[in-house]
Structure formats: structure tokens, C-alpha cells
Length: 158
Image (cartoon, rainbow, N blue to C red; front, side):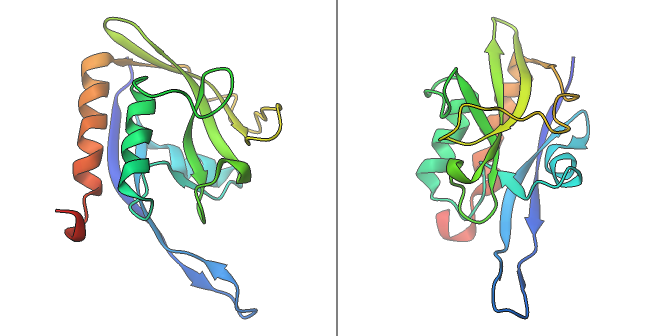
């Protein structure tokens, strides 16, 4: 079985000479067997952060955790759920890394990794097809996700 762990990660902000830039983001990174999912997606050219970014409103972060526990409806068709989203706005229309999640009594499976948006039916595999499926012990998985909200809680949300 694989092990899911979470850790805070920071995407540095930058301002380009043109005046445009990239916003700083602080988010919970998903580590699968010690390997960063956001690092893997960045190595493929994706500029994404997890659905658990400190800069997103707390209610949306809580919905994201519930979606990953299958306690909230999927945010994409065909029961697919976002893991990593646009680093600037978190909008699914910009594109997101999504998965299918299966839960049984003792196990959670992440499978069918792909990149998609909310206006096109196509799911792109670009380097993501090699990921998974990953099987997690359900109890360990649920405990890891329960800890996400504690990890994210900033000083202004105590």
C-alpha cells in the first residue's frame, strides 16, 4: 500500500519587468510514498497548486477535503475530483489535475490521473498516465486529510 502524507509548500511570487507576475501561494502538498505530486506536475510544465491553498477561502478548502473523502460531490463530470488547480485563481476553467477516487471499507484508491478543465470533455494524460493507481489504507488516508485543516490554519484563522 502507498502512504499519503501532507506538508506545507510555498510557491514564490514574482513580478516580471512587464509588470505582470505570479502570486505567492502557500498550500498543502500531497506526498505519495514520499514523492511530491506538485513537484511531479511542475516537472511536466504544469503551474498548479493543491486544492488546499491557504489563500483560498476556508469554506472551499473544507469542501475540497470533503470531496477527497467522497463526502461532497465531485467537481468534474464522471465523478472526477480536482487535486491540483490553477496557481493564480484556483478556477477549474484554467485547468486542473484530476483523479478518480474509489473507497472501500479498508482502502482508498487514486486512479486515472489527468489534466482537464470544466468546459471541455477531453482529459489530457501528458505525463500523468504513469501515475497510479495508488492504494492507501483508508484509516491512514482519512487521518492524513483530517490533518490538512490544522496544517492550513493560519494565525488569522485560529
